[in-house]
Length: 534
Image (cartoon, rainbow, N blue to C red):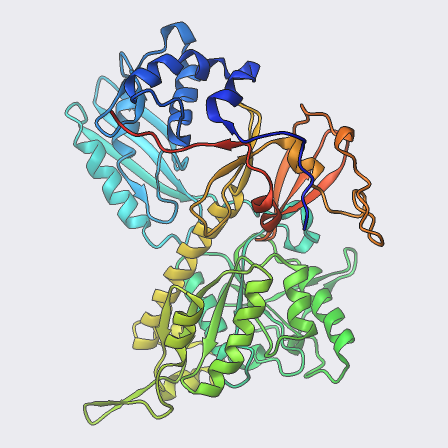
């Protein structure tokens, strides 16, 4: 694809671009200081840009001072530190392993109150999910680091959770707008225990404190009515809103075609896709932290419809040790890859059983490991052949509920922790992948699962729109001309669109869909090499 580029526009250095921008006076004014400190280099890394911008915001440029630390970072000098700032500095030692950032920068610290007379410090840590697997560690470390301050006599820490708002809320049907994470459990092969994994994962997340729902997407052979035992086994309708009210079992919301009073469906594919769409999007799910979708086997209409209707946060792949299972599962992984849905874990079911002090592998070994190695999926979990696991699925009570301390439950607890952590990481990457930096009027891009960070001129992005409004679909002729877009155009809003693109709203009212792949091909405006310490 040929991208529309401005004539004779070489890549600019950071300071060349900053000098041309009225709002970038801070960087130009500090150029001589940076050059003298860092062997004449006139480039700033993103880390130093943030440090300088922070100092400029907090104080006037005339009073700005900076010093080079031992690692070459520019740090604003601070005088007269308050007790609150000392507490925040202490808490900034605690790093969230999911975001890779300290809890102060993450915005977790709320309602900080310091009593200078009594030496008492009170604050609240507000996490992004009630199912955070390390919330106890956060509470303990927060107590320790604050209590270590010499003037502190007492520390009061309270924990709370304010789940992150759905990233794509405005782009979704009403019923899905209050769901934070949507997890697909898939195998693309029948009979591997996918429904067992989906149900037990959902109840594990609920046990961790999350608000959870399960959507059984298998219309031809729904498993949910057999695996759980809700008191009300028929879905109800809200006549006024024309919406579906889900049934519940042990605090988890449930929707399945099997609860629609129809049993199993006998219908053609297009009709099934319509039924799936209606069940999923018109249900009053309410506020959920996780919606687990039990995907049907295959890679056809139903699977593609689900992936297009809802923005899946992540997928969990279920397989068995046989080679045949790997072949089918590989198709599903490739489908998710094309749809830009991250696969975060592989569950290898029916791996082994123990007898007479030995471990046996009746179906062979290696299918799960092969999926992990070939497709780079980070986590692998093994489930044994255990009669209780099968029996619990038939009895209507999930194994993690029937035996919460058993071997199977421990494996699902590890899987639940993995899903919570990976979803948090993915949400962070997607929400910050593309943003607009007003300080020097450039679009910053850091595509998920990539260490590369670069900048684009807003006009370049707008001129490279490939929609029908800008390019003739029949002839390929460029309808949008270079001069149609002013050089000083700025985006009004940038919103994530699935895991593959962003939607950019421009001042002329145009909403541009910009896929990550296309952004990576555009001309880079600014190169920002890392500073080399003198």
